[in-house]
Image 1 (tube, each protein chain N blue to C red):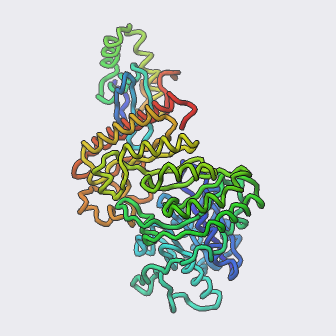
Image 2 (tube, rainbow over the protein chains, first blue to last red):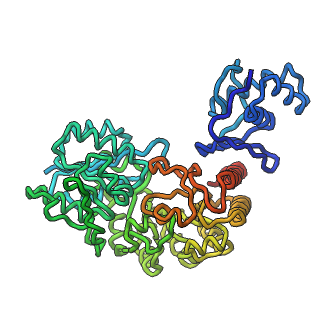
Length: 101
Length: 435
């Protein structure tokens, strides 16, 4: 199963050790934590959930069993913010992974 | 004779609730000839359907619809069509940016009888006067009007502008339901127009490139009257070029001093090359608390192409002087200008990043170039090398890039915009007490 898609035009940017996403169709800017940034980048690249779990767990040196629910929570928050569409992989809501500006 | 003036709502979200000064002036211009009502869709939170229902109850002989902002046009079309359905005999008149600069399209899109172009008081008064006397305004049309005549559109050209602004009656604020509760400040016009011909601006064309000003005493008396009638509130001067005449600003500041003692604070809009440290000090003494300044670019080459005669260093000195005197500068940058190269854009991004870091109390905003009807950039877009990706004028909200240029791709523009927005956002985090 693939991760949800990033709708419209969303731009990601690392800037001064901080991570951001901007929805260019609305002008909304979001500050992300590193993990959320990487997950959104996986969505943008059209990865499957398994590919994303493997990549994120390797990158962040986290266990697969922890990463999979973290991704689901982050995707749920992204969905609320309109940064991704489709919620097939979402099981419950996340807290504190994404801050809107 | 009954006249209803309607100010359609902006789409949500639209910042601030500013009183509909244009319709208040129009109402004042005809109040000796008609019973007049005002519906403010924005401040009064009225939908087009609410305004149509209200019009049905009021049953006006003339409906005037004012849309200074193109984002109001979808709501304007909805309410005009609704009123036309239930009141087929009502004369409907439409004014504002869109109908002024695209009258043929306005007359094609909306079932209106007349379009009033540019400054509206005199032309609208003529229409109402003719109708009140039982005459058809088409028989002896004044300048500033466009209307259908059979299959063709008659456009009578630009109007004569009001020569003496002091001769105009004061805005008919008592006709606005609940005034001043819906608004955060009193809006005042102390001068109208701007002589500059910036290619990205339609306001100067709206006022036919002429700036006129009221007497300082008249402006102070209007504010004093508002304080007496409704209590003390902040004042927003909505003039396009508030400091266009230095001596007049000094006179006005002197006239405002007694009101300053009573607590007056005010905001204005002006150009950086029409300010100096001495004038800023005078304005601060008279109660100026914030100023909107369109800096647009930090590239000297781009500024010269725009006809702006300041340098980035000079601009920073002005911002610092404002802060020193307790005035908050609200500085706006624009990206996507047709003569802006990638190097120019980089200069602007670097300037914004440094400005946010070094002077965090300066309020900074960045907007995308928006080629509005009436601007040279819209009329001559091909000559400017401008590729307009989306020309839906009702959706041009300054937040989304809708052009590419000879020098800049959409990605160049988006990246620069994002970098500047990040710098502004970071400033907020660093300085929560600031902008």
